[in-house]
Image 1 (cartoon, each protein chain N blue to C red):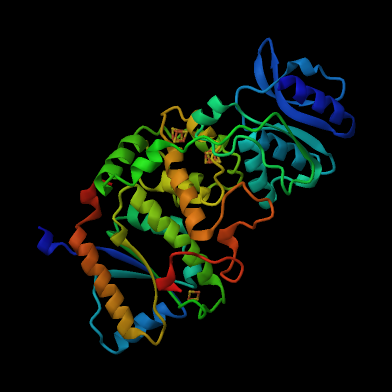
Image 2 (spheres, rainbow over the protein chains, first blue to last red):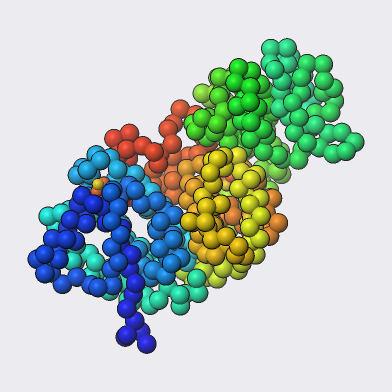
Length: 138
Length: 272
Ligand code: SF4
Ligand code: SF4
Ligand code: FES
């Protein structure tokens, strides 16, 4: 059963860096996993904890939040909020028993297409190893 | 203690529009605005009650008036966080602080049973402050619990929730006019217990950097869900990650709304 398990991943990608990075990965035909459902947001700072929680509630086995590197945010300090808020959510998820590997915050610039492919692949494999979230009983 | 407080209230009343405290009459105990000439023998300190929310309501209703409030440690902390979010005006508030007993502090796992008046414009504390009590042992045990155990624990706890909103309603730090917990986008309507993870984790995230550990939510919860175990863990994380202690310093800005230039994040070096 687990060998055929394909995890569902929701990835929040900021418009200016990570979404462009994903686009470039596609243009360059880099293999990136089809498990990832991208949701474009204007800035990683737009991603509220509620959005991440709802992705889990809606059946995601893992959630990715990708934005511009610190210092490169299109809105200067949007991702400063992200880096303060998301680690708290990450901890909170683990306090109720959701494995920390089911959530990841990272930065991918528009020039980092290979990095996009790598981060998503790593993440999909990590979540695949954990199995479906529903099996944890949540 | 009560006599000293009444004396101080009587002294201050002529210069204030009133003092918010608990009043006990034949029909029961309730929050009350004591004004000059009122019978202060009816002023009582028990039970614990979230008077800061009453202060906020009165200050908004009477934008010129100066009030007083009889407050214990947690009330003062709650007022501090409310002040930072424009829910009360400390310039128009006289704080009549008092310290809880050691027994009460132990019951609440309270680290600071007496109000800290530093940075508070007008305040006075009655009584000799007692030392802080040790933290909730459940919080320490948490480290030992596996993910599966945590899951089992909270599944059992959250399954009891009747979604009465009592935890939100009593919380001095829950004051938004539009509440995410009532928004069907985040919390599906008509489902009991509220489906995981929305209701409880949304509230826990909203309490991050705001929860002052007054324990009112836990006290009021009809399902006896140990909510503050989660909130205490969040308080600890806020301290470690952002160097912030909710309710402690009236001059410190809420960290989640700051940029990295105004307040660093710790332990996230791989992302910086
Ligand atoms: S007070 Fe308890 S039962 Fe009521 S909504 Fe809050 S957690 Fe649920
Ligand atoms: S302990 Fe509960 S009621 Fe008190 S501030 Fe924290 S969340 Fe609100
Ligand atoms: S615009 Fe990319 S993180 Fe803000």
